[in-house]
Image (tube, rainbow over all chains, first blue to last red):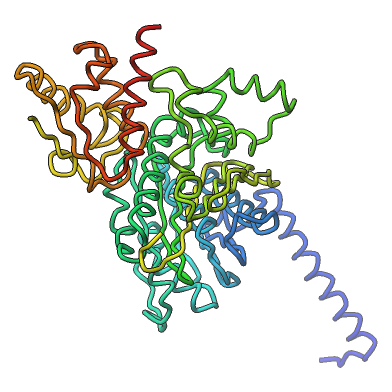
Length: 354
Length: 112
């Protein structure tokens, strides 16, 4: 065999590399014409990275969380049956309200009819964040085996996360999560939380699912689902309630159309937080029709009457916050909608005196 | 005197307005406990004692439907007389006031 000169060898190698590049580009072109996501056509698992912080109280973290949830919904809506892996590797912190929104959204997606999507997750690197996922029993929603952890029972505040859910007005479901703190909370405060929960459940059953949620899935659940978390941390009990309905800003015009007209005449454009504030302010004297609701009076009672707890209402883009003993709330709109309503009560744990 | 202890005779967790809302709603309480007790008390010329303590957080929908709904049911006398047929027992005075308010409001709407 004739030995190639150095110049010829270089030439041949260049030709081979160019041929490889051409075939690789052709392969990429072919994939692009058949699908925007190559794994979908092949039926391979899709991986969706979870945000670093699960929180809805700040614009940046809310944006990351709602973007992540939108991706999940889109994947669920696109295919009837394939596998999604939620990648929590970078997740470091779970704040109660944001975590409940994610938990509720997953439970809602799993209830979609004729959807065989399989879910699994890659646990967070952060050991405490991983424990939170185990404690809220995410594996049960996903329908997978309980993951093993080396840090079981290591974090007291994680052990205090409790979950409840239902689709009717019944405080029995929430009782174990709240009554565990009897003796550490004054009776009026426990009553205040139960009152608020009952009111939130009643509103969910009567108004929240009156129309289709604007989430692109065009799905109206057959049941009036709600979800609840309680968490004790740093001597503070936080109770969070969530429904994935149309939100207060969309239900208010249906229940009180004249009120919205009044708001429009005052403000022009009515923001979501203004709808929440108006809904809270509705009371027996302003709604003269039996059965039309008394507003969210009981929801804020913990702060307004008992003067011992914070109440925050998140609905779509709006936030309404009432501090203990305050009469004037703080309210504003954030950039992204949570597509639902979350109510958050927090009280200091102590000896049970007011 | 006819006595209704809500915690013992109905539920520790009453909530919701209508039967469809949940198991311990105001409509059910009114129809199954409050109205029979009131009929019996009226026949005997007695009062109905309603013991409210020991229950976890009455929400407005439950109370309004139970007591305001009793006035609206129009099976009984005008509300002033109806209020006189009840004796409410609670350590929380504001709760009793709230119930009376719902009954009075329902009566005033009925007469409009």
